[in-house]
Length: 141
Image (cartoon, rainbow, N blue to C red):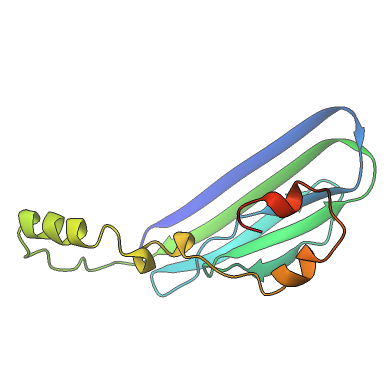
């Protein structure tokens, strides 16, 4: 079982002090039967509270605010993980047959979840709000 220690640093520097910066981080590894997260250390300038949530695709992400004026923001992440042995699936289908199958489903939208059209339930309510004239002329409105 291979063990990896991953160290990632993101650093922003600003010419003038900034404040009220809203940030999102995606530095949380997958935790499943194939990968164990042994430890994770996250150090962020100003030691803000990081709110962790699960996104639409099941990944963990975090958000935080840095309210105090600052000229540098540093996000330092160190993660130790152990990966487990994986048995690869059998590959006994001819490559031509595999490519043919992919060609046949190339326009089937459910395979491209991020392209699936969703309806915004409050669209009619938003249309009633006073807006600049060009907004109501947009094709999706």
